[in-house]
Length: 209
Image (cartoon, rainbow, N blue to C red; front, side):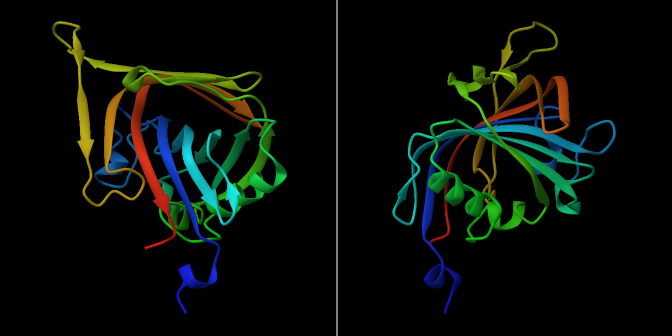
């Protein structure tokens, strides 16, 4: 029997707000290795689940943030992850999300990403997403915030709109790219970067074929 026949079926559809310490565009999408000064991958990624379920558990309407800290490239592993979820998310919903995001139920992208980090903690705090396309961001009381903007034409200073299409992308297929700044701190992990990579995307993830 296949995994999809023996595990709980899940699907998440929504929007992603990805901030990391790479240069804008994030070369991990092309060559697999970060362009950060120290070769690390440090990120704060918000997900707005517009429609989602895990078995019979409804996950629609949940906003959550992952604070991610890998010492090298993501595929080299040894990372730490802290997840931030609003207080109103039930323990049952949280349990489902934990299984999905650690890859226990299979399905891309988490069947890959979930093997590269350990959970360093879960924080209960309101997640406020400012959803405005390439100008989006988020704020979390007591944890931090992030804000994205467009790239700028180096000569005129005008907005420089850029998108990346990844035919074989397993996190997203099309990402709107800009520059963003973020600072977050939780469970002993403090990340602060300015004018680094920021990508806005839509996702449709599932463990069903």
